[in-house]
Length: 136
Image (tube, rainbow, N blue to C red):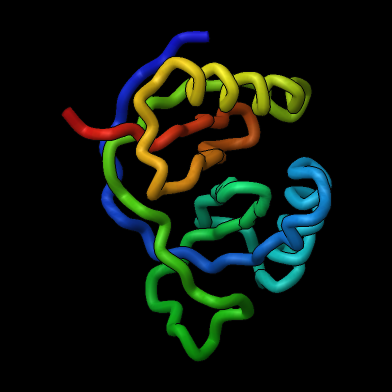
């Protein structure tokens, strides 16, 4: 698995929170089902999964012109900063590799514990597993 680095700005998103008592994969399915059910369309949105301890959050970007009062889910800010990431291609057929990528990054990087890990769903073919790192 090839690692790369990226610096993110804070991103405002809509969020659906998992219950924290179920396994992360189960929370992810439930959260994304709920998130997508509230959207008129997925078109034009970016999607993220956030792992914060034992809790999963499914997130979607806002579309231009969307207002807080018209959103089906609460707003939240994905924290910016330095991240190390691994790309998983054809991720839908390789779901088991997501946890392994997080494990690898958390075991080999100097992690910033104040920020969560992020799944950045770039497309149906490309997913970046991202771990927050302390900037040098």
